[in-house]
Amino acid sequence: MKDNMKINVLTTEHDNLPENVVEGVKNMTSATAGNSGFIVNICLSYGSRSEIVNAARKISDMRLRGEVEREDITEELFGDCLLTGGGEIGDPEVIIRTSGENRLSNFLLYQSAYSEFFFLEKDWPAIERNDLVGVIEAFAKRNRRFGK
Image 1 (cartoon, helix red, strand yellow):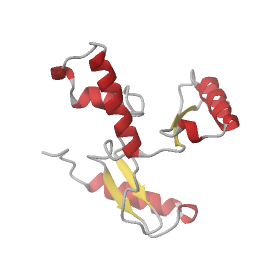
Image 2 (image 1 turned 90 degrees about the vertical axis):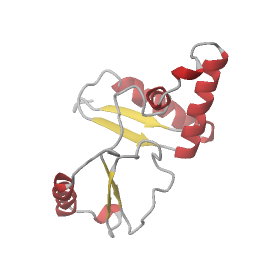
Image 3 (image 1 turned 135 degrees about the vertical axis):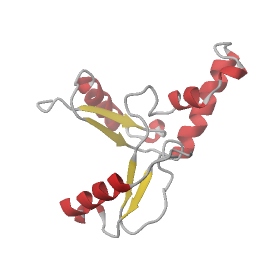
Image 4 (image 1 turned 180 degrees about the vertical axis):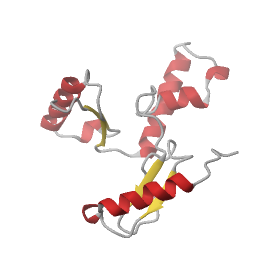
């Protein structure tokens, strides 16, 4: 609170969380909802495939209620139905994968379509300032075309 940070928690398996964790998440997110500084996004019990299925179900429900027509279903509407939707979080520009892994591991599959990937051999706790500076410098040199 003293740093004016807002905390978002993205979860697709809400029912798998213990009640005390659910209560803590509610307290934390509601207490920081009005903060306007740095935004911290926490993926907790999260899976991208589940997120995509849940978005499809949400749009299906909207269609059944007559809130949208088939022609209204766009990439923008679909994106708005994801946990990162609504504009505040947005799609990641950079994804850093640590520990020598070269896969996404079911993480932000839809949102990472135009992300720039960096793969580091170190485990997360071993990442140092110079590692991040190297990523930033390499990112600055990339020519981003966003599929064009």
